Length: 408
Image 1 (cartoon, rainbow, N blue to C red):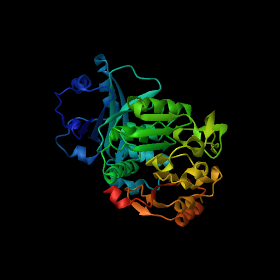
Image 2 (spheres, rainbow, N blue to C red):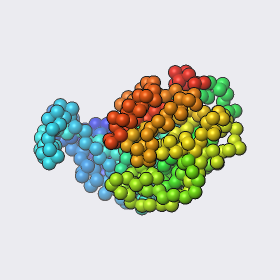
Image 3 (cartoon, rainbow, N blue to C red):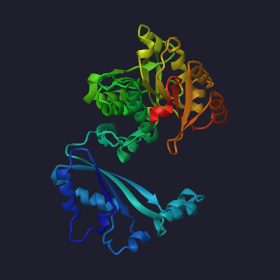
Image 4 (cartoon, helix red, strand yellow):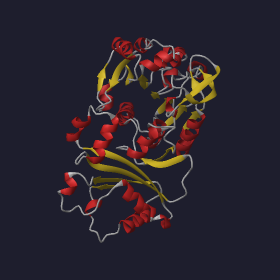
């Protein structure tokens, strides 16, 4: 990854941008990512800086890159406008059309353009975009997402633009993984981490763990066929350490309909959303107790991420025997009252977690902090937000672990 920070606009006019990007295309590995930050030409920071001799806009950059195609590279340009903080109060209460007009015409409204440019030295895949994940403390690894962001408007663009997904949750998960290894007092090879991903989507957390830990063993469950195909693709370099299942976990076995949500493949679920769906699949259902009835429960899994769109109570009902036999991984989960209600849950399953010896901690999505939370507090959240879109991510940590020690 290259980061060109407020520098292109200061290059002397005799330096050709076409020549510059031709050389970048020649030297970059396939799927390299360039982060370009440039001052907006209408902003005072551009106008008042005598070094700024050329405007860098999305359209100008695209025109330059179009002329480098003889290098064999093609480019994907994604843009994001950075508003001047002083301008935000001005547009806060404006109607959308008035706000758009002000952004186009008012000086100092837009402070910077932030451009993410991908380089790929081969023909573009019609369905997918390959990029690099950029997670602190982990060597960058290849990751593939959906090309059509109308199908996946959250996860795919976020990873392409930033190289990350759920950065606070990712950071906490990696710290816990390393904390477990410290507490065990054994190397990764001597005591491999066992990670389960229930609702694996296209594989962000599974691929992350496999690349952050050379000996980790991953088991992932993903029922949606399109997501599962991408999950397989992202896991492929480490497939020997992964077991992938193309079915859903619930409290019954058999077959059922699964609804693929509009604009959010990762939001697909066992029930139809109010705004409809883009596809309906028939998927297999299994219970956790059925799959692992003969397993030694305490040794089955160390760490789990679960995101199953409000069906958590069904998972726990289908895994009750294992939890009562000592199954106790550290779990990262989502608690979304509106989705729980759609799936027929009143949210009270969190009492089961406490009865099984878990302590609960909510993850602050603004800065990644953790604070204790009780089932009663979560049920207050349920009652208050059941008809909204708000949710929280939380940790369930067995009493045998000291969270502060795990996080170091």
